[in-house]
Amino acid sequence: MALVRTLIDGDHDPFEPGLPPGLSELYDGDLHFPPSPAERPFVISNFVSTLDGVVSYEIKGQAGGSTISGSDTADRFIMGLLRASADAIIVGARTVNDVSPESLWIPEYTYPDAKHFYRQYRVNVLQKPEYPLLVIVSGSGRLELERAIFRTPGVRSVVITTSTGRDALVRAGATKVPSIQVHALDARSGTIAPLAMLRLLYGQLGVRRLLHEGGPVLFGQFLAAEAVDELFLTLSPQIAGRRADAIRPGLVQGIEFRPDCAPWFQLLSVKQRAEHLYLRYHRTGGHRPTE
Ligand SMILES: NC(=O)c1ccc[n+]([C@@H]2O[C@H](COP(=O)([O-])OP(=O)(O)OC[C@H]3O[C@@H](n4cnc5c(N)ncnc54)[C@H](OP(=O)(O)O)[C@@H]3O)[C@@H](O)[C@H]2O)c1
Image (cartoon, rainbow, N blue to C red; front, side, top):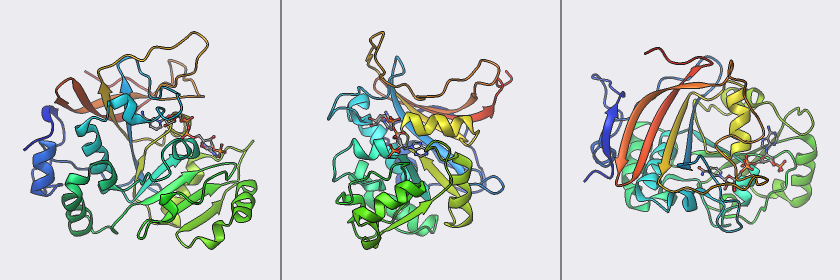
């Protein structure tokens, strides 16, 4: 039975089904992605936001997306589906450090009921390894190496960091954890350029489809670098509000665009389950899509 109802669907490929039947039934439609653009992975992003655009309450233990979505079933299913579709998932260090130490960035972690469908799709249809590569971006290298992401069989992770971060990780024992690869890249004031990350992922690690799961700081940098191709956005029917001096983040934090170069998007699909909406957008560049 479908988990969502499709209201608008711009994903049509009459020649080749993207999803196997179990998943297309749950998703009430098919899912295709274009091939990666030249020399970098195709980048999909996934967020959940309140009606007023807040993506984190910034309250300890309640800072993550599940508080925003109200642990919504279909949001969790779509998150798992996107994970199953990707070669790698990229996240900022804060998004990792804010969640439970047991958290895993694998498809069935968010929606266990579809575990077999996800696996069938990933391994048999897409011919990808069992789990996507987890890519963590941390300038400082401050990561808790006891986390389940570093200790779960089959889960591989790459930390993209600075030379200072690499030294911190070596001191903390990262070289003794076989599932972790550390890559130090050039940085300016501790900030690594998104295009350098994408070059590494594409050229050295074979990543062709990358899922960006935030947070808003890392996402803003990717948007500014024109390195986001699609946005999956769950709109959750609650309002979080903000104090005048508070920094409950929206989708993007730490970067602002001028109207003449703000990224615009074209709507690809709209799905619905009860009061939640699941939107899929394609980035059109710095211009409004034509009507
Ligand atoms: N609702 C949603 O869909 C959603 C999705 C994701 C996250 N969230 C929430 O959003 C909250 C805020 O996340 P956030 O945006 O502050 O954090 P974030 O982007 O996840 O992580 C920021 C950290 O990542 C590292 N980093 C980011 N860009 C870098 C670069 N270019 N070069 C080097 N290092 C870089 C730095 O780590 P170091 O400090 O180690 O140098 C930085 O402090 C979190 O509570 C999270 O749970 C919500």
